[in-house]
Length: 454
Image 1 (cartoon, rainbow, N blue to C red):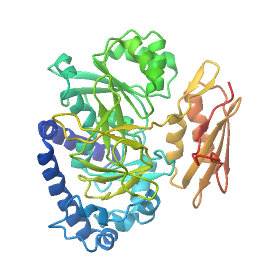
Image 2 (cartoon, rainbow, N blue to C red):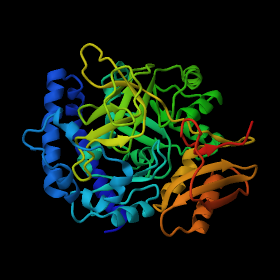
Image 3 (cartoon, rainbow, N blue to C red):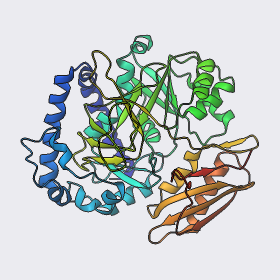
C-alpha cells in the first residue's frame, strides 16, 4: 500500500472515531470533582497496567506500583521523565514491540503535507517545544482524536457554537504547511463533507498578500492561527467576518489581542497545545486556560520537581497522558511555566495562566518570515539536537548541536527554500555545527530566533 493510500485509510478511521466520540468528550466537561477524579484514576490504572505489561522501560520504572490500586497520590512515586531520556530509551518505552525510533524517524522524514502512517496504525509528530530539544511522539487513532478535539469541544461547549451553521462550518487554519506540526496535520485530516468541520490550510510561510487572498476566498466561520500572523492579517484589512478566532502556538500579548479583536470584532479563544497531549483553551476573550484534565493529569513543580502551591509560578509541569497507551507519558516534564488558578464554580478542570513562548518574526523590509518556516525544516532532521537562528541582512546563520551524521548541504538547501517560499529573494543561509549555544547569563534561557536590531 502506498503512503497516500495508507494515510487515507487512517484518516477515515480518525473521522469515524471523532464523530462517534465527540458527544462523550463534550459530556465529560460537565463532570463534577468526584466524577473527574474517578475518571482520572480509572484511566490511570489502565495506563499503568498496559505500560508495565508491554514496555521494558516502564516495567522497570513502575516497580512497586500496583496497577489495580494506583491512584493520584501514588503517582508521585514515579520519577519524573525528561524528553532526553524518553528519546534515548524510545525503543523500550513504546508498548508495541514492532515500533522503533528508526521507523518513526523514517516516517517523519517522508512527511510532507500528508503524514505517513507507521505500521498502518500510528502517526508521528516532531516537536521542539519550549526547550528547543527535538522530540518524536506517536499516537494511535483514538489518542489522536481525543487530544486534537480540544479546540472543537471548547467551541461546542461555549455560546459561540450556537452561532455556527448547524450543517457544518468552515475553519481556516493559518499554520504549518507540513503535517509534522499539529496545525498542518489537522488540515491533512480533513476532507469536505467529513463531519461538522471543513478545514482549509493557509500556510503561514506564504507571503501576506497570498494569505489575504486565500482567506478572502474561504470566508471561514472560525479562524485559527498564530497570533503574530493573525494580527498582521487584521492590520492588513482582511475583510472576513468569522464567528470566532482561535490563537495558538505563541504568546497572545495584550497588543496582539487588541489588534486581532479590532480587525475581526469577534471573541478570541487562546489555545495551548502540546504534541505530548496537554491542551488548554481559554474562555472567549479570557486569559486563563482550562486544560483537558480528563485526558492529562497536570502537576506544576519547581526546579527540583516538588509541587508548587496554587498562585505560584512553576518551573516545569509534569504531565501524565491518560489516553496514549502506545508511547506512555507518565510524569513527563514539560518546560513550560504554569501558575495554577482556582477552579471556577461548576468545573473541576485544571486552570492556569501560562508564560508564553514568543519567538521573533524575522523581517527583511516588506518580507516577513515566521519562525515556524525555519523550525519545520530543522525538525525534519533528527540529528539536530538544539539550535539558534540569527538573522543576517541577506538571510540567516544557523548554529546547531547535532548528534551523529548530518548533511549540512541538504539542510542549507531546505532552509533556503523555506525563506524563498516566504518571499525573500536569493536568501543566503549558513549552517554551522557548534559544541554549545549561548544562553542568557542570568535566566539560562536560550533565544532561538534572533532578529536584526531595529
